Length: 257
Ligand SMILES: Nc1ncnc2c1ncn2[C@@H]1O[C@H](COP(=O)(O)OP(=O)(O)OP(=O)(O)O)[C@@H](O)[C@H]1O
Ligand SMILES: [Mg+2]
Image (tube, rainbow, N blue to C red; front, top):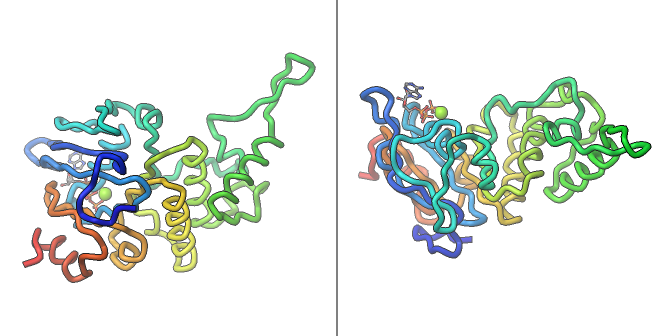
């Protein structure tokens, strides 16, 4: 883990260079550059309208930037669609989560990538046993406890549903997970579990970019903080080298003075 302000090529999983995006005359992103290290939690903070979601949309292929580049391991990435981001190992947890309420946990984890089994050599059926076993394996690997695997997920809590959506991403060997306000709608205990899951993902070498308005959470979980204001990157600071007051000043005034 690299908690210094600098980044070196070896530990870097993602780099954005001079990313810009205009909406009409408005600069939603104005030449933003920074890097994400392997196995770090990078919090993305800033006031409403600072450009956080616009940046996430560029990184998840949902809405390409007007200019600038995104690279991984020195290679340029063309992220024109969410599928491109998938292929590059970048998983994005959207606010809607994208779960199907009537399906159970393994069915949601494998949604769109269902495992099948051949019977009598030609009949194809869903391989529920394998999906269940692989789901349990995945949940154990990341220390996730979900007691009701066979229940429709509509019966599960907000935090549990969040966990299932994250498990879907983890199924595809992601190297970067982006989360837009994951704790916003959760209670204290559920929020704590999501923080724990983020820390387990980091321990397994996954990098996490997390947007949060809650600086208490940010200081609990992040290694570094990237501050955006009016589409510009104010600074990227290591948690160890800053304070909440300093971050609030950067968010509000664009500097610590
Ligand atoms: N599709 C769009 N059309 C026009 N303007 C947009 C569009 N999307 C975002 N914007 C504008 O771009 C700026 C950045 O918006 P963005 O959603 O990235 O902010 P944010 O930091 O995610 O804010 P919040 O904390 O409220 O989610 C805002 O001024 C916003 O109004
Ligand atoms: Mg937003």
